[in-house]
Figure 1: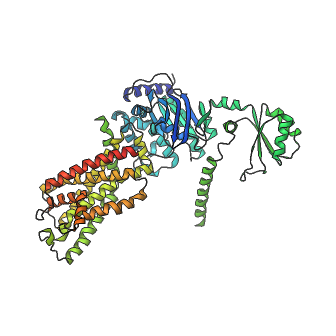
Figure 2: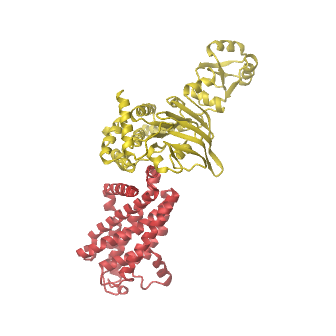
Figure 3: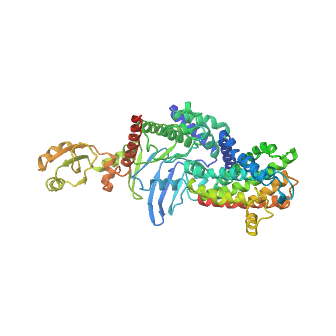
Length: 365
Length: 256
């Protein structure tokens, strides 16, 4: 037994002794059946069903407004389902609220820390709210702070923390009561790449050390690859659910991206000469490189087929690329849209603007 | 008892926050000082220090001191409970709402912590009593503390009730203008209500602070005749507090 697995078993024993809940079964930790939520006629979550196994890292992937947060809010008892049912750790989210709440830890998109208190005090209050016995509190606080690398700053007020530190502290806080499931709603949104990968390291660590299931939402494709299984959600429905590998495999081989001076002709030629269905994405103004509509083609074997395609096309080709499919392609394939366009780009643009303004102000003086 | 756990936790947190903010603790004495020593002094000199309507000749500063004490508790109580709105804006409310504790205990916790803070601020103001010509005996202080807490409790109950419906701090100015100021001026804190016209007298009767100020004045200034019997004041305050608490809890539970 590895040290980590031992730690995990210890956590499980601790949990059973202190949280006052009946012992956990071996079945799925989350079971969702035909879950639906409407807001004044608008269907935010539409007949969603899935199960999540114990110690799984399960991702909800989809654009903003797809229904990810609404689903989480129902699973953590903040929102009543309009119809359907869900159980968490064997407890019904609608009728056994307290048992569900004791079973989960949550990190919301926006911080929910008390910024006038220190990190350690935030952890202490959380432990009190969740019935952690007094003798355990200090020990657990030390352990989670160490894990997220905040031991040195534990005595500082949270208002002095950066965005990444706050997120890490919230993850640490969510672990204080040894939950069965940790919900992370967009855990890396608005964080720099370095902090983002640090958070992912923590997520992998916690599964091993805390014997925990992680349920997260994201719209970063590259991050979703860290999950054991992914549910792709669009306009309130699950459109696909599988491991990242299987999903990508389902796209069917490689992706060829072409930019041509005349997309319409190129499309027609691809159909006529190679019997290939292509997708077109309009030119993006701010993309560097040659202008022109981007054309996506899925082919079983890109490297052998590409030379033939190039030979067969009569229009001028401005650029060409072959790559293995990503989850971006999976989403594009399933919904006909790219996930990133409306969400991340807008955020990034906003941040870039703020940065620019700051540096200008700095340069002026 | 387990269900009351959150009440204690919220109380502890709010007190910790309050006592960490020294500037706010002492800064909140500024308004009462201005009222008593500038307004009280100035107004008192103009009316010749003889407040005949009060039924006894008494220095105006002295007369208004219990009223300003009531004002302090009103403001401190409502401010403390409006922290619910801050908590909502800064997210901490969500941390409490997803915890395995009943939502009524969160509202009750807010009322109890607000009442503690407001009555503490009231007690702090007693330091000023000698300068306003109010003499305090140990017996008076022993009587004052529970009375202050009762007044504070009803004011905080009102605060939590309002804050549960308030979505942002922007609405707070409205509360200030349309609830707190009228409550303060109608309560008889600044002047005796014995000569007030009927409409004002009627409004004063539905103002909970009227009974609070009357009770505080009865304890501190035995020479000044009370508007109501002390037991009436206390009984009504207790009734109002209980009512406010129940409405505050049900409003908070429904809104959250």
